[in-house]
Image (tube, rainbow, N blue to C red; front, side):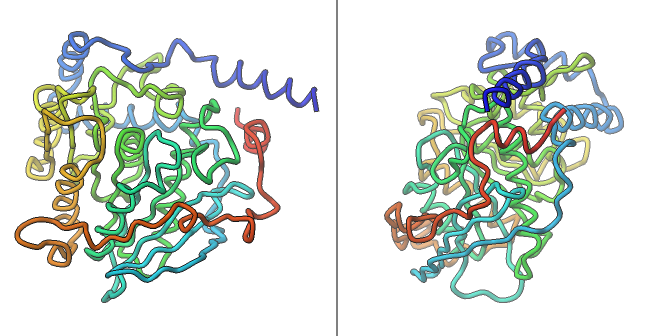
Length: 384
């Protein structure tokens, strides 16, 4: 066992951290430096062809930088576990787990309409850094409201949080595992017969915003993207799950999260920002740059920014309301089910206790094939 642990530690130091000089972590630049870098980036392209050439380099480096291209070739085989169906006011909540790869489980909840006609839109709902965040009130409000509007919503745990405790959150390949998990959630939703593959959205705040713009950048099956309080020119994400692998820089290029978010073009993109975190400059720096990218596709009308200068870093009601309207328009959802007196109402939502939202319990434990521990998972994946 000690020999195995030593080998794993060598892997962590030689493989994952060998490119530390390529990492852009946290507030990697000052706001002034970031402003100048955005101007430098803008000189790298001047038409659609040159932008798409740059976009291809950025996209390829995201995939290779997080070693996504080394993940096992798994198609289907989700082995879904669905428990404790709860029928509430206009929506249903189910506790769900799917296999990300053999022995590694994605845990979460699916919210879906009580009544539906034909195939429905689907929305991926990752979350940010907070203990048991998937089980909190604001996530329940968001997912239930979108479900009542006609979407199937999959809220799932960050690795190392809530029920995703097979590994720790700070493991060195957290960025890879979270992106892989999001892709598996997407593929699970697309495999369902009740999902319209042309109406797939994704939204999350903070670290969930990072997950949103990264998957959107590398997977065009995400049709509408709403990253909240996270797209910044100077802040690259302060956690290993956002900037712990070299996705922003290589020997041949440098980019930041603004350009990664811009890879959504020409698909609909809403940036939600506020004045009390690293997105305070979005209306002046980040958004204008992305608008110019969308203009290359004649798609300026598909990118928006809603800015709350006096608000803080959260996915509070005002931000949710903006997201509801944008997602409803582009995913063809029914806002009439939630609007009363020109205001989106969330008071129909039943806030469930955390235990009612968990898929694995003492009575229904996690399957016996589960891989437990950072070292075990890393060894199983056998990354180079």
